[in-house]
Length: 96
Image (cartoon, one colour):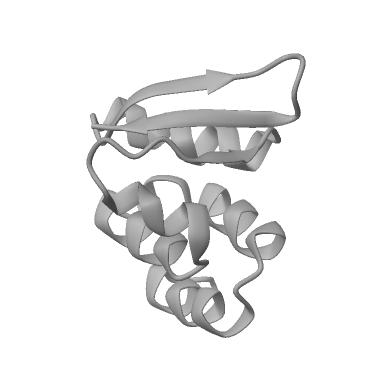
């Protein structure tokens, strides 16, 4: 059975493991809405929950799934900035 956004939300709440959840967000592509992405990521806690706070500047691991998910949030104007650091293994963002 294919993964649905609702199933992904349950997985995120149970595992709270970004290494599992963020690649699944990326895998769903356009099948998951921005609101669903934010809900799924917020359930991961700490920095991810900051994605719902205007003006917050959380940092995330610098890997392809995170970059893709954060870039989508920027394209939808939820984030005002996404910076992929070359010297540090992280991506910093600013919530719009």
